[in-house]
Amino acid sequence: MRGALLDRDGVLLLVDEEALYKKALELSIHGAGLEKTLAVLARAVREVNEVVRTLRVRTLEEEATFWNTLVQKVAEELGLSGPGKTSLSKELHSWRYYQFMRKAPGAEALLRSLKEQGLKVGVLSNTLPSLRESLAYHGLDAYVDGFFASCALGVAKPDPTAFQMALEALGLAPEETLYLDDDPENVEVARRLGLRAEVYSPYQRVVGN
Image (cartoon, rainbow, N blue to C red):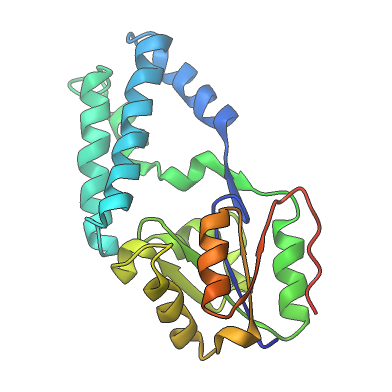
C-alpha cells in the first residue's frame, strides 16, 4: 500500500452530545428555557445537514456566510440578540460545528500509525468545506496530506466520483489504497473501485500492512 483514505465522522471525530447539551443548558438560563433551546439547536443541526446533503455551500467564504446567517437566526429565536446582549451574540458567532465534536478513541494513534508506515493519508468526508479546520481544531490535521470535503468537491459519497477525485489528487491508484469508513455502503462502493476497504469502528483496532 502507498496510501490511506479515511472518513472523518465516525472514524476520526464523533459528535460530542454532552458538550452540546452543556452549551444548551448555558444558553437556556437567558430566558428561552432548556426545552426550547434544545429544539432550536436541533433545528440548526438539521439545517447544517441539509446544506451538506444538497452541496449548497462550496467554499469557506460561502460557509462563513451561511454560518453567520444561521447563528443570527438561532440568537433571535432564543432572545440572545439585541440591546445589552452583544457579548452573547458575539459568542454564538464564534462557534463552529466542530467544537461540538470530539476525537474518536484511537484516532490520533491510527493516523500516526499510517504515517509511520510511510503512507499518504487523505480524509474524504461528506461535510462543509471546513474539513481541514475541523481536524486542526482537534489536533489531527498534521497527519493528513489531503482534505476532501464533499461540499468543496461538488460530489458526495457514495458517488464513485468522490473517491476518484480524492485518489487523483493524492496520486494514488485504488489497489494501493486502504479505505476506512463506518458506513458499509461507502465501503462497498470503494471495494468495487478496487480499494482495500473496510468498515471501521473507533472501538476496534485496525492494523495496516
